[in-house]
Amino acid sequence: MGFEDNIRKIDPYIPGEQPKKKVIKLNTNECPYPPSPEVIRALREADWERLRLYPEPACDTLVDALADHYGLRREQVFAGVGSDDVLSMCFLTFFAGDRPILFPEITYSFYDVWAKVYGIPFETIELNEDLTLDPSGFKKPNGGVVIANPNAPTGVAESREVIEGIIEYNKDSVVIVDEAYIDFGGESVLPLIDRYPNLIVTRTMSKSRALAGMRIGYCFGDERLIKYLNDVKYSVNSYTMNMPALIAGAAAIRDTEYFRQTIEKIKKTREWTKERLREMGFTFNDSRTNFIFAKVPKGCNAKEIFEGLRSMGIYVRYFDKPKINDRMRISVGTDDEMNFLIGALKKLTRT
Ligand SMILES: *Cc1c(COP(=O)(O)O)cnc(C)c1O
Image (cartoon, rainbow, N blue to C red; front, top):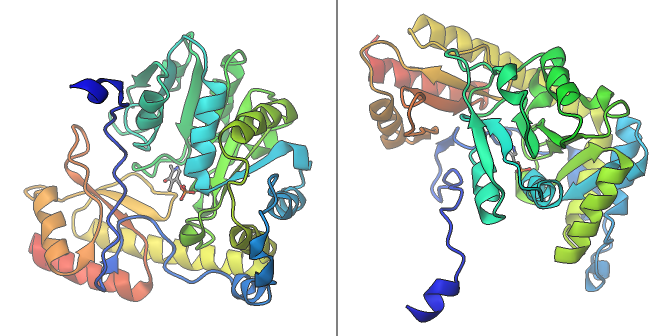
């Protein structure tokens, strides 16, 4: 069919719904609290007439604030339009070889989409029965490794030792550790950044810093890797991050006290929710993230409960995939939202 033959066709990543009406939204792991008041203030006080200018191509305002906060050199930091943009650039930059890259069979469902769109061969590694990572699967020849830690949607956090073992074994590949949820628990491999020139650690402001709407992500790595990454970025789109995002991101990273308080609140609500879910017969791995990946009680059907919640105005995420179709991923909201959720689940599971 003529031009149809020349078109790149791909099954895209499907983001969680953003409903227009007011619902209890526990389906995309956003922060239930607003961003730091410092972010709002910095935006209000910004010189908006400067919008006529292109933004900083190297994202200096944000990169400097990040380097300062994490005690790194600015040459070790790269920023982008959400960690989706950062990860996508990493795939394009670091996975240009012929060998398949490796990532877990159950993980962030964008990884295989990027691999396909960029024509990167890949192989998925089975998780253990209990959805924990089997590190031995990542110890074979490959063109790169991607691991989300804590993993999504499982919520499982692996120890630094386990992840370091994988980085150590794979000295001839770039290993990307996606730490989108690390602020909520688990051990970061960021302290290893000076020791492993093959390590990239990615982070996001979408979850723990309540800035999903601003699209701010970043990664850390060896100066050489960051330079390669920038070379590719400047070959695709030099002005990725807009001026407001640079201002908001820098203000967010500086407000450490607000950040700490927000994380504490979310963790507390998470633990409360875990207790209630356990009492009702839900089972799950010990989530270290801002969501709980819960298996429904015996005799219940996850899809039915998911749809039941939806009809009551509560949105959670359900993945109709083998091995995980008996579970729901529930983002941690406010105390009131979780209370309402538990009430609804009690009706739907009749306990
Ligand atoms: C949410 C998420 C991302 C993307 O976050 P953005 O910064 O909003 O693009 C990346 N990786 C994982 C595992 C996530 O859950």
